[in-house]
Amino acid sequence: MARLELDSVTKRFGDGGDAVVAVDDVTVEVPDGEFLVLVGPSGCGKSTTLRMIAGLETVTDGEIRLDGSRINDQPPAQRDIAMVFQSYALYPHMTVRENMRFGLEESTDLPADEQNDRVESTAEMLDITELLDRKPGELSGGQRQRVALGRAIVRDPAAFLMDEPLSNLDAKLRSEMRTELQQLQADLDTTTVYVTHDQTEAMTMGDRIAILDGGELQQVATPLEAYHRPANRFVAGFIGEPSMNFVPAAVEGGALTARRATAGDAFRYPLPAAAADAVDDGTDVTLGIRPEDIVVDAVDVDPDHAFEATVEVVEPTGSENVVHVELAAGPSVVATVDGLQQVRAGETVSVGIPGDAVHLFDARSGSALHSRSLDSVDLESRRVRP
Image 1: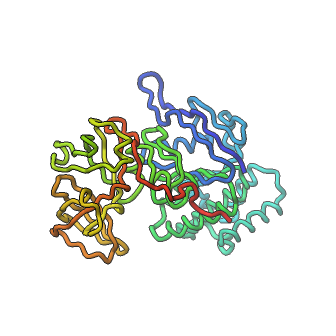
Image 2: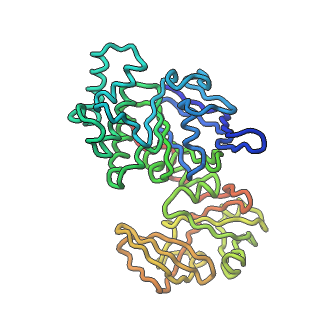
Image 3: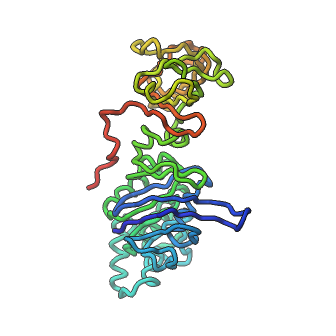
């Protein structure tokens, strides 16, 4: 195991005024054995960050340290790091056994019999023993991914780097491989940095997630912390599907009034005490509410937080229905309800926005001003390691 540290790491492409900042002053520490997921939209700098850790891109400013030793100037082969690529990167003319053994032959002085033992034991761990004498062209996508993982595992590195390794698989196989990767990483207990643009992968796999946007680190937190206590509006909108609802508003007399340009001036939402204490009167804010927190056709919602609405679209997914509604007061929002709850387009319904579930963000900076109430929920732990 190893501790991986990124200290004010910056990457610029080009010089002078034409330089493009791909990664901007990123600082994050990955403790021994942690599974950290770098997540963000395309072009946010996550793959560039991973490539700098691997040594495939140079670092413009800052330091990368592995177990306290600066590795900025070390060539990739000397970093004791193994990388799994999106494209699998298997040698088509070699068998599975030869592909898995190749890194050992090139980077270690292990005798041939010990190399073979490592390959055999890793193949057994990944359930690909029967594939060892086949070539990549004879394998399915999932089998190729297991071989790529095996080639990294046999090296017994200090850290694993994974660059969207599941993106070429179909949805069902991706789900299966997510589970297998989590179990495998927990068994190996090796420090791992995993890159994905898929926030579902990030939420389900990472001990912690690091969210990037425009090359800047937005938040590092456990998945539940990022979901329930986002640092800013970007994180709140990026993490979660369907996305959090946002309503631009102004604070007036302890209540929110939606801005005329976006939602009409009839929407008024009295703030609960905790939220009202977090903002000053006259402040421009953005109200945030998760779709699953919106109550559709419930009778026990505080009347001050209930609104008449018209159902515009219903998207059934089986376990739940995604309901798009337009409030009579102005804003349109998305709610998720149980799949057995009957809701039809065109219906008039009552929509409740519970006071203990609202988020508030600064309208200009996007910074979080208030998060939903979760006093009794532990957001620190995500999964139990064996």
